[in-house]
Each structure stands twice: as structure tokens, then as C-alpha cells.
Length: 202
Image (cartoon, rainbow, N blue to C red; front, side, top):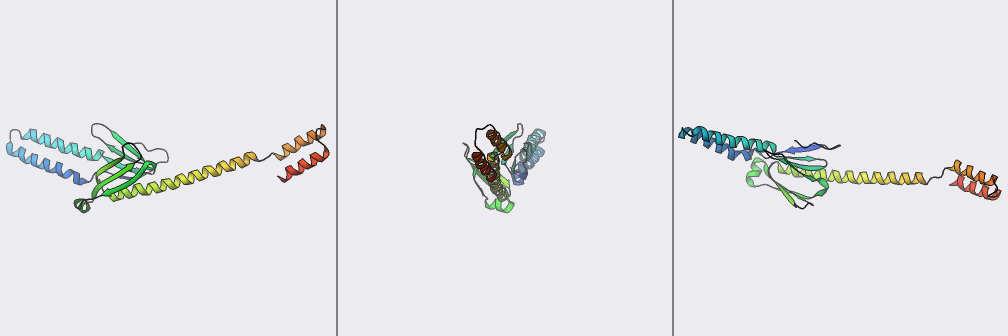
């Protein structure tokens, strides 16, 4: 995977298109070899074309990956260029998958992710074990929500504690000020005693 993970980000699942996607390129390669051998003179050119096509599809499959982390879903693809698309877990509204009969037999299918972005939805086709990809995304969404709730609760508790500490009066300092006011005759002995009692009981 070419995408760098963020701080505290963990890779949960990494998957790619099923090997079934290579069946057509494989048969094209075999047919090209047969035709190339039969034709003879232009056989080498045909072999180069079908060989290049098969190699291209192999590299394409290897570079086309879907990764689930504890923060986002990453979609990377491209052969001659690098492309990456991300879906943050808190922006994903719905995840679903479907499998044809062939997909059930061989273990592949399509996964659809609906997000709050303008694009709306993204479909990943021929995914290996689509149910596993879907379950990993929904599980990480739940854990992400729990993490966010816990973090907000912790921040709120710290804010309340800080507020309480900032509201606490420095008793010795206030007593010193009161004594100085009494010595200067600004407040009476009675006022001094009343305020001192109030401070000590606060």
C-alpha cells in the first residue's frame, strides 16, 4: 500500500480484486499463443501483444487494493499513475455487498459504500470475500463512534475539572489581603472575622 498511515492509525484489512478477474486475460493469452504458433510469421507480434496485455492486467490487479483502517477506507488503483481515494469512517452512511451465484462459488462480489460526499456512492467490483470487507468497515465504524464518544466525554470531564480548579479561591492569599485591610482600618474587626469564617468554610 502506497498511502502513508496517519498517527495512531492501524491497518485492519487489505484486499484486492479476486483472482477470477484474471481468467479472461489468461484465456486471451492462451488463444494468442495458439494463434501465434499457427500463423507463424506474425506469431511473435501476436505473442508480444497478448503477453503485454496479460502482464498489464496482472500489474493492474496488484495495484488495485482496498484497505480498511480504524479511521478510513482507502481505495488505490492505477498502473501508469497512482490514484487514491479515501472515505472517512464518519462520512460513510451505508455499506452493502452482493454476490452472484458464481461469486458465491468462488468467493467474490461487489461492495457498495454510500458516503455523505458529492459522489454519493462507490462500488468496488470483484472483491475477494466482500462480506469480510463490509463487516470490517461496519465494525470499524462502531469502534470509531465509541472512540469519539469516549474522547468527547474525557474532554468534557477535563474542562469541568479545569473550571472547578480555576474557581477555587486561594485562601491564604485572601486571608492576607483581609488582614491588611483590617490593619489599614478599611474594614472592622467584625467584618474581618465574618469574611475569614466564610473563606475558611468555602
